[in-house]
Structures are given as structure tokens and as C-alpha cells.
Length: 125
Image (cartoon, rainbow, N blue to C red; front, side, top):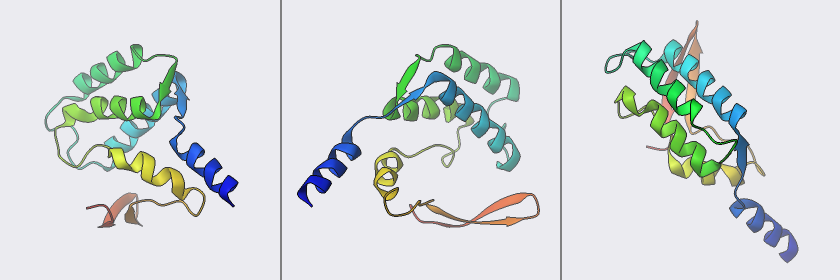
């Protein structure tokens, strides 16, 4: 049992890395979803400027990026949107990592009505 606990601790704290292509894919996917579901994504920045900003970040990414690095990249990519609720939270990376052993947790309760997704409860805030 102690060995299992030790393995879990090392697994939890060992940094994971993502390939550059995976992070770029995730950025583009997230941007596409945000365009579909965000009520006013381009209120503070034009679509062209956000695309140029995203492209410039994608072009400077290293071949391998840690989880913490990916968090910083996503925060930087979507910072120009300038609304307080669009972003990612640091604690999700480490909180959700261990939950994979038990169950996957999305910190939101969502409902889908037609082609729209609505948040009915935010378990984080």
C-alpha cells in the first residue's frame, strides 16, 4: 500500500509535457469554441488582432511545453479579450490531475439547448 501511495505521489508531482503541435491544436480549438459560445468575444479586440496575437504566440512556442508553460500560454493567448471570466485557473491543472484515478471532473454544470451551451452552476466560484 505504501508503494502504491509513493507511486501516486510521484505521478502527481512529476511534470508533464505537451508537444508544440498539441498546444497549437488546443489553442485553435479553444478559440473556435469561444467564437461559438462567447456572447461578445470581440468587444475589446478585433478578430483580426486576436488572430494575429494568437499566431505570434504560436510561432514562438518551443517543441515541448510543460503543463505550467501551457497554462501561461493559454492565459497569454486569451488575455486581450479582457473579460474577467475567460481564462484558465492554475489550480485546475493540479486538482484535476489526481481526479483521473477516481473520475473526470468538469468544474461546471452545463446544459445544452439547441446549439448553445449554458452554465447552470460553477463549482469553483
